[in-house]
Length: 530
Image 1 (spheres, rainbow, N blue to C red):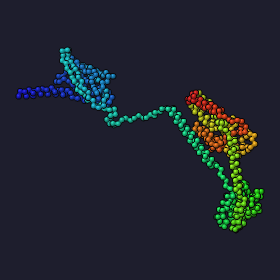
Image 2: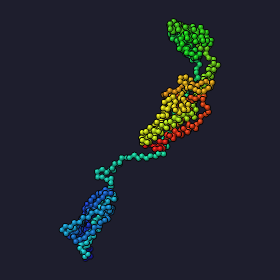
Image 3: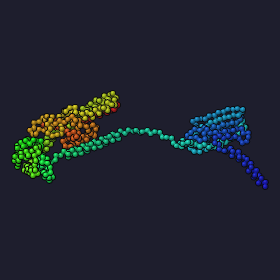
Image 4: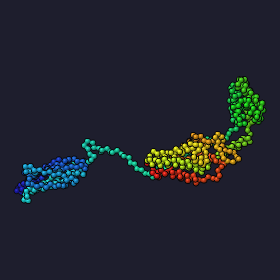
C-alpha cells in the first residue's frame, strides 16, 4: 500500500514538471514568447519572422526581442543555426538596445535566405543568461523550432502560370565557305538548265526548218482533178465556177512545172509565156482555145453544158499527164536542190568566224567593260560610296548587253574583223564586203539589225550562268550559233574572209580573258565594298 502511494506521488510530480516543458517546445508561427517557468521570470524572449511564406531565394528576417533586468546578461547567438534557411552573411543584421525602468529591451534582426522549396523547420536555439556577477544565478532558455513554407518562384496566389517568355531574337551567323559553295552550285545548276533549254530549242527549231521534199506539181493537179470528177460538180455547179476551178488547177500546175507566176498573169501574158515554153505534148492552139472559152464563161456568162465542162476537165488532165516530169527529170531536180542547199551551207561555213577569233573579240569587249568597271570601283572606294561600287559591276553587264548596238560591231569585233549578220541565205541588202580573190561563188550576207544585235546578248545579263550556257552552246551547235544567235536569227561571220593568212591561235584570247578577270576582281582585292 505504501509502495503504490509512493508511485502515484512520483507520477504526479513528473507530470507537473512535463507540462511546462511541453508548453516550452510548442512550434510558433508568427511570434513566440519564451520565459522562465513561474510567474516571476526575469528573462523574456519574443521571436518573430518577417514572412512565414517566402518565395525561393527571397530574403527574410528573424526579429528577436529580449527583455531582462538591468543586472542580467543574455547571450543570444549572432549566427544561429536556421537550417534549412541560410543566414545571409553579407548583411550583419541590426542590434538595438534600450533601457527603461530597470528593464533592458534588446532587439536583434538576423537576415536569412530561403534556399529550399517546401516546408522549412528551423532547429531550436539555445540562449544562455546570467544574473549578477560570477556568484549570481544562471540558466539557459530554448527557443522552440519555427515553421516556414518556402514557395517556388512560379507560385502565385491568383494565377499559377509561368511568366511569358521573351520575344525570340534571330540568330544570324555568317558562314562564308558555305555561302560561296551554295552560290557556285546554284550557278552551275542554272547554267546546266539554260544549256539544256538551248539545245532543245535548237533541235526543235532545226526540225521545224528541215526542208521537206517537194511534191511534184503533177501529183497535186491530178489529185485536185480526181476530187472534182468524183464530186460531180460539173452537173450541179454553175459553169463559170467550174471553169474558174479548172483554170486555177491548170495555172497552178503550169506555174509550178515551168517556174513562173501563172496565177498572177492575164490570159494574154499566160499564152505568151506558154508559147515561149512550148508545153510538151500540147499544141499552143489547144491552150488558147481553153483560155478563151474560160474567159467567156467566167466573165461574159456564156452558157456551157455539162458535157462541155467534162470535156474541158479531160483537157486539163491531158495537159498534166503529157507535160508532167518524168522520173529522170524528178531525180535531176532533187539532185539540183540538194546541190543548192549544200552550196548554201558551204558558203555559210566558209565565212563563219573561227572560234579563236570569236573568243578574242569577246575578250577585248570584256576587257573594255572590266576597265570601265574598275575605274568606277576605284572612285567608289575613294569616296566610300556603296552605290557606286555596286554600279561598277552592273556597268560590266550593261556593257556586254549594248556592246554590239552602239556601232555596226563591237570594239572587239571591229579589231578582230568580225561582223554580225542575219542568218538568211542569199541576202543582198547591205551586203558584207568580202576581200578575197577566189573565183568560186561569192557568199553574201546581210548585216543584222539593231534589235537583233541587242537581243542576242540578253542572256549575258545572268552573271556566269548565262555566259557558261552561251559558251557551251556556241561550241556544241553547228556553225557556232549560240543561244542568242538562235532566237535572234543571227550569225557571226568573218568580214576578212579570203584575206587572212594562217590559223588563229587561242593564246591571245586566253591572256586577255585572264587580264579582264583580274581587272574585275581588283576593286574587291584593293578595298572591297565600302
